[in-house]
Length: 315
Image 1: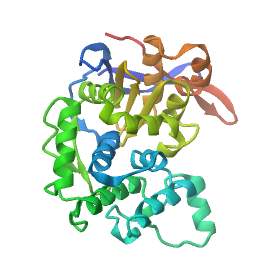
Image 2: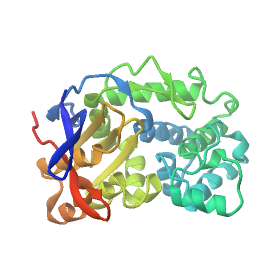
Image 3: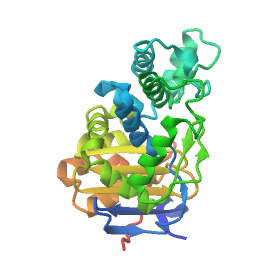
């Protein structure tokens, strides 16, 4: 077991998170690592920048804000929902074309708002992957491909996406599984996810996605959370994946990835910021801004009695 982070309460290590983390150059050279960086897992939503780029290359014609939401695991705020709606209506579609499952917004604030407005049932457009799905549908419309089967792994859109993923991770990303949203999901490792994020920040064909994620981090996730803070304060783009993964792309220099094997996202921000700092990317201003990510308070009543902190024993 490799401890990524410890949860300390009143001076006692109450629990630990096992995982792996790595930093890789665009050429694939390993710069730093901890844990089993070659263990295979599903990349989940950490693959979205690459999926969205395929849609854009096939004619989705997304403006930057739409591209940010196509790369997003959005939280269902009104701005997210409005952008997804525009992505559909601009090509003559509506929510019924989406094949992600109906969902309530993942943000408690957004969920409370729609419940207060009288909504009694979840909607597909509120699903955190609806931007990715809308981008896929726009690509299908542009190519005159069937939209009814756009999630089928044999659909031409998904075959192109498979090829993209193989290129950026540097290995066969199959056999594919099915993600929570119903789309194909690809296999990788911490090493290959870090490689993919190094490519994200260094290849011209992926620059549009990187720029959108960096310029609009609150559209890609939510204000105040680890990926958005990293993208705001560093020359970086960042994206979470379900079950405890996080990828960070430092423009033109490096890709980093972390995975918590228990599936929790709780330690990933702290571990990532610790490694970014170790590699010299954080700096004084970034250090102050990212302190709440690197050292997460553990509360006892209304006061801080401990913290979640990363282990820092890099290979």
